[in-house]
Length: 290
Image 1: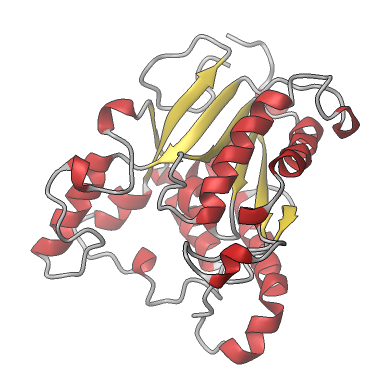
Image 2 (image 1 turned 180 degrees about the horizontal axis):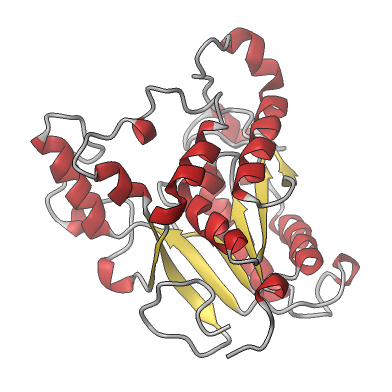
């Protein structure tokens, strides 16, 4: 067991766009902050290609300054989560797979990997987290920026401990626990069935088995399930702060009764990629063993 106090331990979450931090890790960020731990989010892009769905917002007026709007929304969300100020890696949103944004040389999808890793190494060495979280290898749902965030974060988490790599980025720092945010495929199927039983559209209408799904992780590979029900109010309030992206009619705020909303957002799941400290194989806390 590490002897550091909670206030010296840190959680760093690496995300692709503003609002991703709430959906995948809003609960663990709020939980860590409430426990007295340091928290920070690094966002790889400005989210310039996101939709504009906020009530009363004019897409034509908002589109040219969407990155500015989303930075303001991110700052508001992070304030609610007690996760500090926004930190951007500085790349442009790549858009969904197969769209024109993928070809933009300023996009994260087209980023020079060595350069992107160096930028993130500098962020890690500055913040000095014990725990780092990013996406699974599919980026949860296949968005190019999520996939790229996974690649860059895994490389940076290893490179930051080697002083000879990126010496200009600061003193070497070892991240002791590395996690991939994900969703168990069994739970995806369960939600699918609940939606179908209520006559509601489901994202995978033809999926009957875990192997039919294109997203998620086999249940047996999920190592960590964190109960964040106590932090659901702040998590959902932070998500609502991203008002350009999630209107009041959003799926996130309108799951049917029967506890679906609490079950869908009240647990956050992870695959522990590695740990430098002894920790249980099945965990309920990202800081277990520290």
